[in-house]
Image 1 (tube, rainbow, N blue to C red):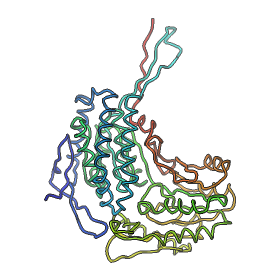
Image 2: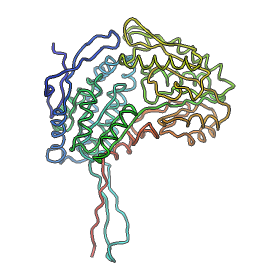
Image 3: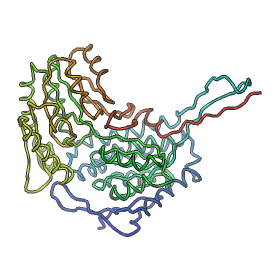
Image 4: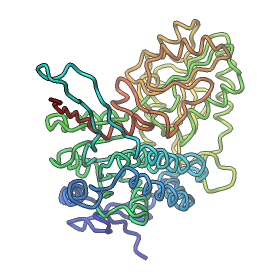
Length: 483
């Protein structure tokens, strides 16, 4: 049996131009379970040209919004049909509990496709009253046109869901795409591309080139026929993408990291806040850009809350997520395990109080224990930098104003949660927070109808909802003289 995954270009599975492959590693047992094509700039060029042909000359260029919407609905049906397969692909590749993608990622992927199917026939232009042209009346109107060929660069933490964030919206707008999945998690993107072919999308509309960012990602950013780069990942990589794309005047959308605050006021439902904060730190092993890893707790309940959150962390059973009772698997890769351990070490060195977890060194597998620090300040490394692992830091505050100041004192601005029973406080604090999304008494939800994105170092642009679809269009104005 051949366990080598190939690129998907112009409707066919193809090897890399130089025949090279890269290993896919099981994060539980630290063994290679398959390999994937290691893409080259030549592979990217082939995929981009296929996408460009469909955009400008192929059958796709003549599809109406209604036709695009119908295909997106078909694709949603196929993704729903293959729920088990897609969930297992994503879970197995990063050691995640198989239940999480079944409950969250695949349903969200289906919802993304269905929502975009509705937008496909509703991306309307507008008429604009104006003063005419040199005394003669005019009719001025706008049309929405696809931005062009999109390079979609997808991370490893929620590969299917984030692939469909980008794919659904850009297809609704009439664009074509070359997807570059993470080198750790190419399976679900390749399967979705095959499902696009089954749904009836013309060959070349959706292409996937697997490989490393420094080669495939860079080639996409530099290619003169790629009109937009949509990237989800680290601020460091996002900064490099801007540096490359800027001189070429490419459109860029960046959904980057976070250091999201969860603000717990003393009037909040205590048990709900403990459960919610735990979920905000520990879901997907904390490998979530919006993870609520800064827990700001009002002074009167801080000690009790810290003890309860530490108890919740200690109760999490870590191991092979396919085994009964296991709630948390390993991190996705060795480098990530080492990164998280370094941050835990830094928290201890800088004087934070370790209440649960700590540096882990298992004999096999990229495991890290759920970790809670208390007695921390907002100046500590564990409070300033994105850890991307199951590590929460508790910081005390006294007043509403201090909570807002602490929450906003960050280079990130992706999401936040406010835990309170006061409706007035909830609205006031939410309005004051410098983030793209706020959840009140819940972890900020991901919904296909809601825009998602950040401020500051957390990124540029929005995914999801009407905002996400419009981001893949250009507005053209047409003025007609009416003599």
